[in-house]
Image (cartoon, rainbow, N blue to C red):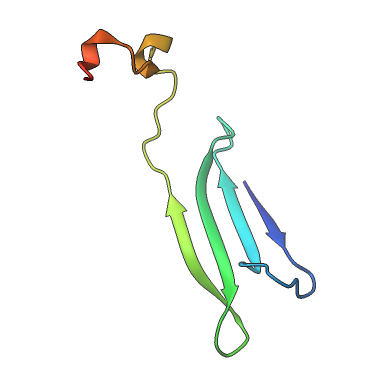
Length: 76
């Protein structure tokens, strides 16, 4: 499942022409992102892409796992 966001006409200051997001149909989590810019020849070209594989959710982390005061981290 994917969705595309694109400028239909030039927008001053816009970094990208279009972004495509692809989602896992079962979890609705994003699995891939593509960012497109205008190339030197004026045609769209893929400039950045990110793909997430083997994503694991609900790993059992607790709030203390994200607490910098957690003594297990031994921060000074």
